[in-house]
Length: 304
Image (cartoon, rainbow, N blue to C red; front, side):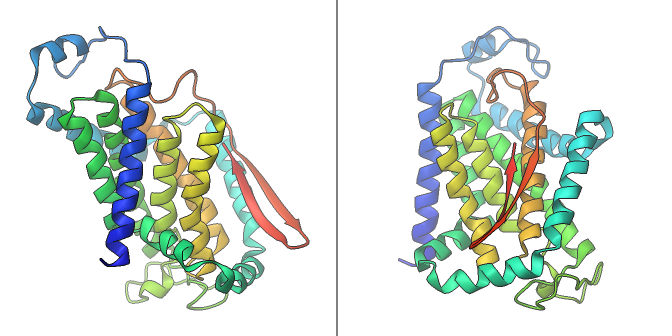
């Protein structure tokens, strides 16, 4: 069986298992909240045993609504949101000054990276594998009538779609050269439809999908150790793209921040649509950059 199929099946099983495990171990949601779209409570909906088609239509509408909410969210930003934006711009600008050096450093390490890690980084971040896994998660929740698993699937699909559309438009609009195409951080061909894939460095599609998945799956667990493990696994595709010279370090760093912002916006939107909540307690708005330079060390840490 081709490696691609093997990796797809492994990823699908891991994500589906994580979502189902969280659903089974977590306490059930409190019934009684009115659902504006149907006119009766979540408990009454379950008692009425609405059809899978009704649930699917409701979830599909929320996917589209979540995408729209993510795009319009900046219109209602407050002071703290603009402070985060300023920190992101400043952090990216600082990291940009080291793009040539960081690219050479990472590309020099690629031969020492096990091939299985490199393959995982490529296949996990590919759109077709991601949407297969998302579909499996959502369909599982739909069939077993689990609102929590359905919501995870909706959040995965809406976040990936919003991030995917945005990153495709940005690739053309920015037109940044990939390191393995032109090893110069300052080469751009914005809005040049004939520039080709060699000028589609920013943002990183693999990073958008991988970090989106990791951030959502991490929400299902309270243990900081499990969360850290999920983020480490999710960070492999972004780092692998820098190893391969497909993206600059600033491409994956800014794509990471963008993905997290989209997930948080859509998750907030879905709070008003589903009884089950993935984020417990108040949502904290925090973002900090930590540029790490030293002997044998070059990188950036984004804390959220």
